[in-house]
Picture 1 (spheres, rainbow, N blue to C red):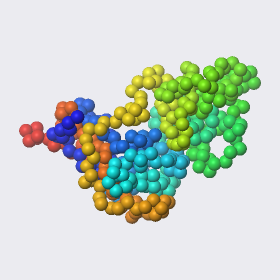
Picture 2 (picture 1 turned 90 degrees about the horizontal axis):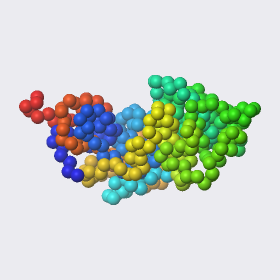
Picture 3 (picture 1 turned 90 degrees about the vertical axis):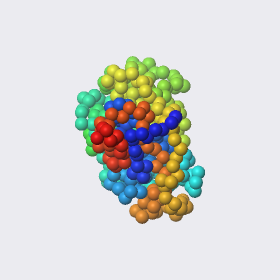
Picture 4 (picture 1 turned 120 degrees about the horizontal axis):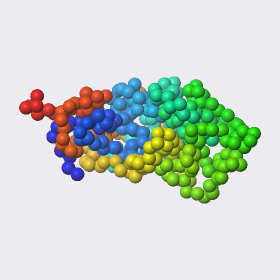
Length: 357
């Protein structure tokens, strides 16, 4: 594919590949080339975004790239196995960026700001029941609360006694946003009927045993659809049987499950347009420009592990090649300028021809 930036100019040093310009383009002229680090991230976190902003000394803006994940970030920062670093293009030159450590630096420094949830202004008036309060269930609840739903958690008896400081902190944040935590025995009433919810989410197929005598379970070796996560009409399961070597994949599957729940509640197709990132379908239309990152040497891992300070973080973040960016595809620019005006970093410029001016 040939790139012809006849009217669109992108400053690669300041572009954070947020995609706002692509969303605003009324001519469908812009495309977003997603950086390899973001493609590899199970939860589609904009790694390039927070890294470039650290490099630019804009940590207050860098935090905005992490806020969509709220209190889950403490878990993500501790448990993630950093698949992003394995595909970092800088690795080809002199060593991958310390992407995970830069994230941990922000999470540790701005922890209090992250213990919140950006809730949709429009309340759905829908109730979601979630069985299980491990990371999968909590991530489902977090996303459901973000979507404006009322959430009821049911703690499984064999999980009730387990202690995990990070998960306990997430639970407290969810409680602050009116999530209700009950025991699994409260799921079914005395007549064996399951409490009524607009949608019910199971953390595992094993949770079917909690749904009372009237419920006919599917076999535990049943394939749960990896996109829809739907078991029955309004019952979903976030566990697809996929590998759990990286716990962050559990969060990814939880997010996908609530996306399906939202579509179900809105009478929308569950699978339409899904799987873009999981299929690595991001646009790869140009070669990385190695001139964007500076020549700062990579600090050995043992010297940054849990030891990042502001100066070190900025220097290491400045090594980023800023792989992702927006670009012009269809050459149908109308010079209407919302892409330029709404770019949060003023990184995009529309080169308007003289006669148009």
